[in-house]
Length: 478
Image (tube, one colour):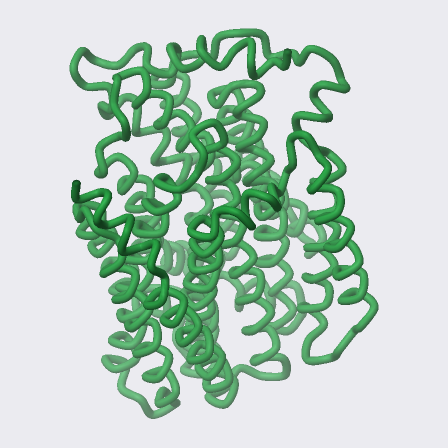
């Protein structure tokens, strides 16, 4: 018998302990979860306003800073499902607290760094630490709902996870731009110190300790439960893909070939693994869950291409300061938060997802007409369209995940949702790095817009013809 079998029931009881009577999802419980889940968006949005300054300080091109984006997302793509699996084995609170400490250390390392390699180290630590927030939150919420005798938690609780990230994106570019403009690019790293400290205090106070031993039955049991070979194959394949993407527009075939070989080996291994890191059988059998992963990844790819691409274009091509560029993207973030809240109160998911896809296409087409002479009001309006897209897509896809994921693997499944989103974010860094490879100009922005058009069409087709979404809506209504 594994450790998870020994401790599953006690942990479910512990996850519900300490809540006020009649209010299992009170502020004391959800506050640290929301803040922990927002730590990754904090580091995604603020870094966007610091890339031009970092490039100047490190004497590299703006395109060369793409490694700071891809390194965080590469780490997060691997660490998210791993954190979910670790939370299922060791307890979500322990894993959550460990991640927060990593973020705190990363903030210190990044603030003191003077070389690009050290900044990359800090971003990797940030990726690993922030990856614990979302899957542990989903697992804690699931167990708290079971403890309270509920089939599912209130929709506002799940929506709150998305809204906390959306609210961060709303103020991140503006606040980040202001701080970067006043205090330098180091702000993008030291901001983690107060944020992680607050999250740590809230978690210690608001989340009940995990019950059961933190030690596995044996090293073999732990290795089998975590599927270390599967993690290594997945990480190796994804790393090879990132190397290939970062080399664009130059084509380096060896990394791509390595990625394909490792991917084939990964599938072969996971089909035989007792506790697969990437459950290939589940993805093949549960088409609704797989389509949710793909839809979420493509939608976030479109959102982050605009977040990073438009920010760099506004600073380097239009001559805006970091603060001005962040301020210009403020309506995008505000609409993301507002839309996320509205969608979280709805019962159905199909209509918001279709609206998300349509708006993504509208924004992509509109971006084709942006240029050096475009009034700032029009630029802000185009970016705002992507805010509507992000808010609707994030909440609706998260709701579908909760409905379709196996109850005993919600931590790992939630981590994979974020993993697919990070793969999209990695691709967005490669797209912007390629489009702005030599210089940041209107032509590069239009190349990005054409890529967005293709992405939007794919998302729209996937959503409109997904019959499972309509069935899920009818089931929720009943």
